[in-house]
Length: 161
Image 1 (tube, rainbow, N blue to C red):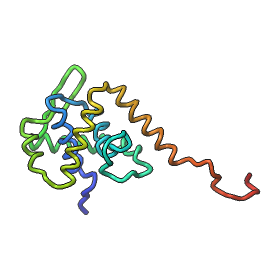
Image 2: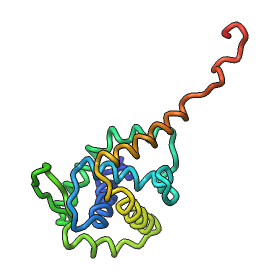
Image 3: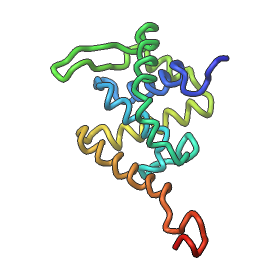
Image 4: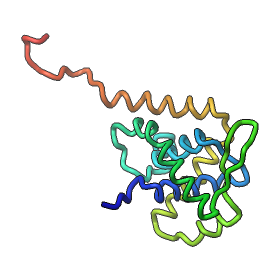
């Protein structure tokens, strides 16, 4: 069975939109993970309507996203759409010069939505340092955790009160 959602190709494309909007800056994997999360859940950050539905467990996505993004980056590098660059901060990734031309070929409503949200999330989060970005996303995750708790008892029976 072919996996379409969250496949290395789909995640790689989302990553390419982030790298192209951030160009010429190079980003580390942690920043890419956080920016990708912001693209998919932009409404949670006060931005445009989210591309994906607001699932209650979306904060858990961050835990598995890193490997998916690494797999997507390997595809982008193989096709010369992204470049790996060592830096004093560690390994970073940057869109190649061919990336923008490739992205402009993608004209589906989803691709246009990705482009808009990538631009928004890069403008919103990239000027901030990594600690600020993590604090922003942590406050969003704290709000999500409230979705799992209720003040109403699970069992409405006097014997349990």
